[in-house]
Length: 256
Image (tube, helix red, strand yellow):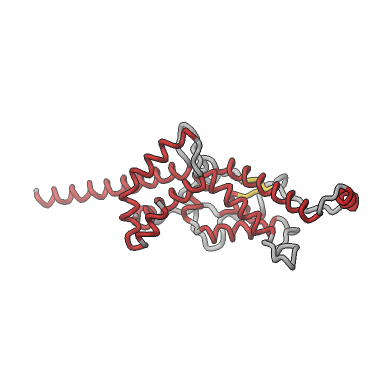
C-alpha cells in the first residue's frame, strides 16, 4: 500500500488508495485471526486511509481530540499537572472522544549509582557501560510492551494519532516526560559518542508501543484504527445521505 501511494505521488493518492482498498482490508481481515501481521504496519496503512478520508470530508473537519497529556500518567502520582489543565493552549473543546479516559502509567526512576554494584561488575568482568545499555534496553522494551497493551482497542488514542502528525505527537510526549521526570537528560550521557537522549528513546518506545497496539485486533472486533475508520466512514455516509434526501425533497417541491 505504502509503496503504491509513494509511486503514484500525492496527486493520485486518493485514487490509488480507492483502487486497492477492498483488497487491502480483505487481506487484513483474513490475517487478523492468525496474529502474524506487523501491527505497526497495519496502523500505518489504516492511518493513511483515515487521513485520506479526512482530507475529502468536510463532515469530519469539526472533530477534536483530547491532548496527549490525557493519555499519559505518572505511576503512583495520579494525573500529571499537564493533563489537569484540560486541553492544551489553543485547542478547541473536545467533540469526539470521551472525557473519561485512563492514562498510560509511565513508571520511571532515576538511575542509582552504587559503589558496591560497580565493584561487583568489575569482579565479574562486566563493562559498566555495556551493562547500563542492557538495563536501559530492557526497560525500553518493557515500556513498549506496556504501551502496546494500553493502546489495543483504544479508539480515543487512535483519534489522537490520526489527527496529529507523528513528529508533533512525539514532541508532545517528550515535553510531558521532561516536565514529569526532571532527572531525564535531553542529550545522552556519552558526550563523545553523541548518543540519543533519554527523552528521545523513551518517547520513541511509547510511540512504537502505541502504534503496535492500535493496529492489533481485539477479537471479535478489529483493531482500534479500523473501528475508527468505520465510524468516520459511517458519519460521512450518513451526512451525505441526509444531504441527498434534502436535495430530493427540494427537487420534488419544485416539480410539484
